[in-house]
Image (tube, rainbow, N blue to C red; front, side, top):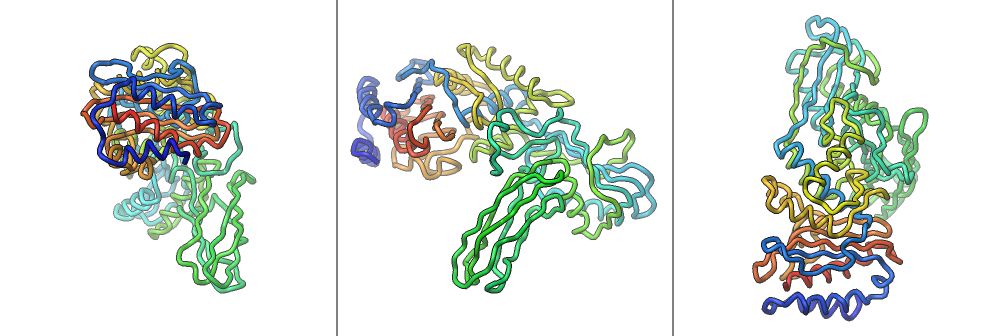
Length: 467
């Protein structure tokens, strides 16, 4: 941290002086922006009083920029406005063919309309429900119907990089565990392969275990996921000490959400003692199936909180598809709905809403446009749900360890955004004098890894608390 930033943070750590004029804050801002890395970056800033609507501070506020995960603000605002905070999603377990006693003679079907928050616990709960209904055997296959979404598992822009990280997970109408797996690695005996456990358990993902147990406490493990023969293959490497105090963990995306969900559901059924004779697969559920389980998701406002607090790309892309409102939710329909919403808001023209998460390149918004969304949602009927989805400085989510000073802690809510050459922060501030502000600060084309400039970004936002 440079000397100027240290002065700013020391000042903000103590009691705040009387309200500072915009001119004085602008002068301090100019000093901060002379930082060599920021001077070489594209910087967009906008601060507006929510009550008077007066623009207090702006710097290149109309320059279109990559907002990274600030895109999730667009997704959240559009979803609340179009779908409503109580919007829910249904998933169904049904069967075709006859049933004789505890045996289903046909296939068991799992169909969802795009719930972004299905987990292993849901699958086990449904399997237990089947047991309680007297079902002990499935003589057919475990099938997934994923036709509530238009074809294609890769969200827009996700094909720009071939990364196997969980933050680049695919999407599908039937998706489990954010379409990713966690591999937990624990020691065995020195010189022998480590023990491996996968969550959720399934046969779709194959694990090749090259982790060896050694003496000591050291844990150093890594993994690489690739697609092979229609499945996901994860090779894990490294070492783990016999006396390791905790497991090694490797988390990776999967490739085919539907097959992954079908396999995980089969494991859930077997874990409750239900026998399954057939394989698992994907298809179109036939007409006339008999419903055994009808599950309603948590409301949208809860999903948005999970999405924004932790900047969950998978959830953002699933909600983006939901916005389309069609029987086969598509990217094209979602974009049309979002563009219509932004036009209704009165956004300055020129934006590009390319995907729902902000991952990689494609989205373009100016600081002014992001701020316009924040101002609009401040008085929106569902503004409270929108605001509560944002991380609180020094308290939770992606801001838990940022802006922790006594004058910023809990006074700042904001959505973070980070890519290699992008860092963004936008949200709401209640100043020490009680003024309510909407703010947006975006750095693009940084000459260093953008995350290394978070202190500079936080210093800028901290200045605004003095307005």
